[in-house]
Image: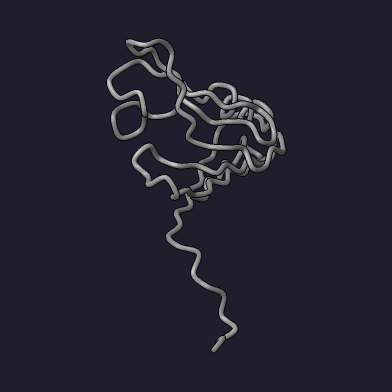
Length: 125
């Protein structure tokens, strides 16, 4: 029996922050300098205690990944894929934590909107 009610989409979190910088600069820093603001530590980085670098390939289908040195050379762990690339207003990623089961993944949408005092950045995960 169908009720006409769409199925639940799961848990979601939305947060917005006003950045005192122009739209284009905010998008560029968010995407090109992702390693500078992505939190460090065991909970947030696949490299663990090693010095890993988070990268985002700036294109549709691009990878979000972390690279780090191991005893056997440079390791690359992919944690996401760019599903939408609309500079400077929107970025949509399929993302998975290193602790997720192989079939688990989430989507993270980031929007950038101009405001009189800078750029409003909204993340919906």
